[in-house]
Length: 285
Image (cartoon, helix red, strand yellow):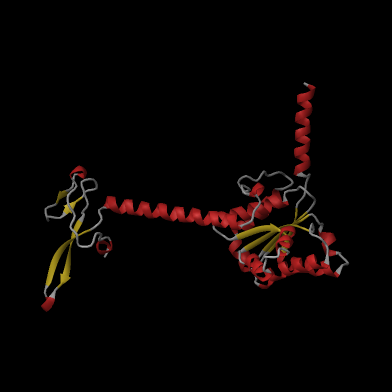
């Protein structure tokens, strides 16, 4: 069966390649001078009146099989890279987060929990998706919430999982464009296996905006696909809000997302302090 599958060139007989050192074996079949395996084989074909006849047909030697397999491997790899690049382009991830991965995650005592949650979420994404289980990263500004969410996005993209990462500000801007069909746009947000929305709470608090925010979250809930959110709001602010418009948004979020607090000193403050100390040292010296 393998020999039949490897037949190439129809019924055109092969000729010896002098440079390759091809030769004929004792059965008169052409062999490769490099790998010493056959380039021809005998196949029995039925003829009229029940008679059969052997015919010599070309096959791939081991060299040619390896070359074919390598060509197919490269083709699959190129296809995979093209698909991955297409996924990255459609993911909407900002340029500053494109290289965020868990391998690059700078772990500290403060953010160890963020890293651990992100790693476990990525490694168990199939189950998270099945359970429609998302995450809510909350805490003060600059504690790595968005970066952690981007790490999850890129790790899953590397596994060829569809992800979109955006913000409610951008979503509202897109919906308000005259050329945007809101139904089609919502379908686009519901297409990826994971939707990540950054900076919940920074959008305008108009009736229109809050209705759209709820619709996006609720639509993910209804199609049973996970959602990850980041916010600078505290858990208490979300749980104790007296405004019914916000309450129904947060109640839906808590149904879908496991809350994870980001703690520690702001990375931006630390970077500013580092730059100040570096400049101070330079100036005073």
